Length: 419
Ligand SMILES: [Zn+2]
Image (cartoon, rainbow, N blue to C red):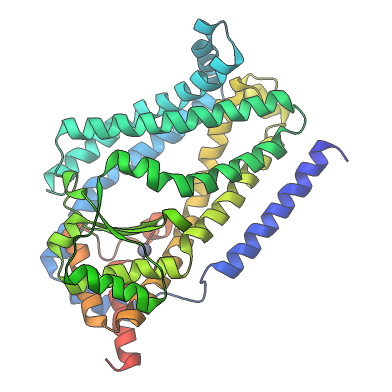
């Protein structure tokens, strides 16, 4: 069988694996609370809080969709015309057009150009965050964060580009197989490495100070049967007033992180409720599931790019001979961008179901729906959430159930458990 035949077979296998993993590991049987209950929850929220959250999101919207449109236009313009391949050539020219220069500098130039063209939208977003008092950062801090994120992307992206195009040279007929394995491996590696190497670039993490709250949280984790080495506090207040918590990392790098803003704003019982939600992610191995599906998806994407990339009309548009040459990188970016847009609602749906399960875990673990509801109100108020966002926006991009869904779920729990 030809490499192409094997690629079709591999892609089919990966697609089946993704569907099976999705069917078995995603908690699909957890539909949102009835709409009537959500509306009752909405009516119970302070009117000025709802108005302010909606105004904030309305102010963010034009910039958000502007960035999306410009990003897509740039990706298509560079990928589906010879402009992108010329940019890659140009970046490699000072080094005699050597393949490593084209691969790394050319690839980074394409990504950087797209970043720079959407930069005005990012700056506009920052002005909105400042106007609404959510950002605590001046332009200096904002710029430093931006440069740090460029540097991190350049290091990880540069290594990935170098590795990928080296494989293409060593195995010109089978690069897609090594590339798929490499992409999957990279996803797994980043899950281990990001919390240790990248998160500290942006925030300082300190173990939560000894005291009744810390003891309470460690006891909660033990009672839950989730071994947590530590609860870390991130100095998020240097950047934002928003409150949050999250769990990241795998195995030895797994950690529960709470924002210092959360400790400042919320009552200890509410912090416990938030951490109980994060313990749910740990208990259900959500980071593992995300890493596994991410790795399968990345592998499938490489094989699919190989197959789509041999389509002659596409190569003619991009002005390249093969999808495997560095000059075709902008074409790959264009395809990935389009697939990313199509996949966004699916990813959002999966994320919402996983988050709803963590909410249910928090309710069952604490047995305290009243505090859960108070915490949701506080979260929405401080973070200027739209408690009941427009339907299309929710379906397109909401990674968490809406505030009114979460409150309705807490009330349903209270009714069923008689609390
Ligand atoms: Zn969560």
